[in-house]
Length: 94
Image (tube, rainbow, N blue to C red; front, top):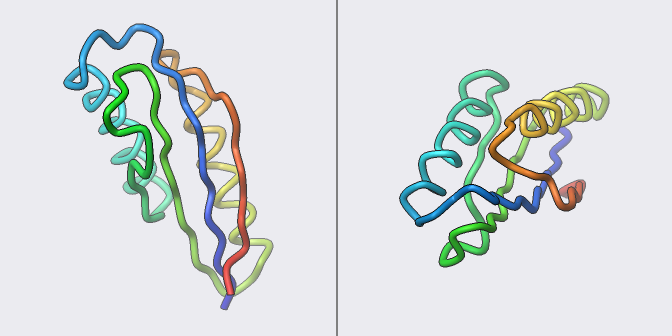
């Protein structure tokens, strides 16, 4: 079994409230969950309206499959015009 986590630091320049931010993040997080079957959550910057730190986790039988899934998730996050990706970081677990 292979597992990895992807952490993505985002900027939401057009967000004027936490409610706006949550609406955008809901689309990103729920879309990744439904499309790629990963675990996802907002893991940092919860009190900032124009910043977000989101995390994704994937588990699979091979390391290459985990890499493919997280590559797809990363491309998915980049596809949202409402967010700017500041940094990404991958960590292999266990």
